[in-house]
Image (cartoon, rainbow, N blue to C red; front, side, top):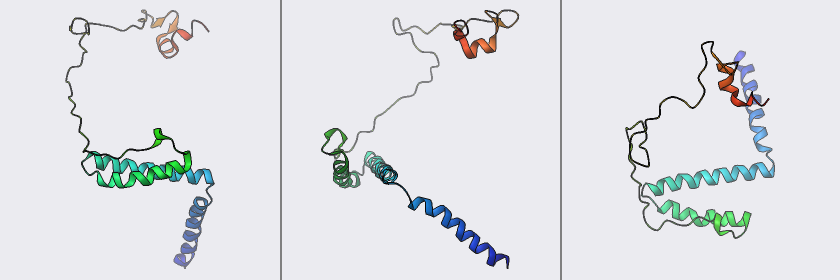
Length: 142
């Protein structure tokens, strides 16, 4: 008996969840289509950057015609096919924690903070340090 009652409840809940997605406005459907197409092109571009350019190059004319149907002939929005494999940019990571000074290539020797230090009572300009650090000089001109 419980299973017989549970199944219609589940079907009603599923219909309640599916029904609002069918009632999207034209704008919402356009945004959803744009997101789907953009995501598809991003995935194809990732594949092209890994060396497989044919899928991306085949999808570019379709994407460009879709863009042209919405925004007109705007060259800044059009994608270009990839003729040669994308070069993977090499990067290096550094284990230095202090930047090198740009003028004389010496290590940055700056110590301390630019913020004022609290006095012995924990106040800065008469305000508790926590309040001063969170609101800062805005208190002074308030």
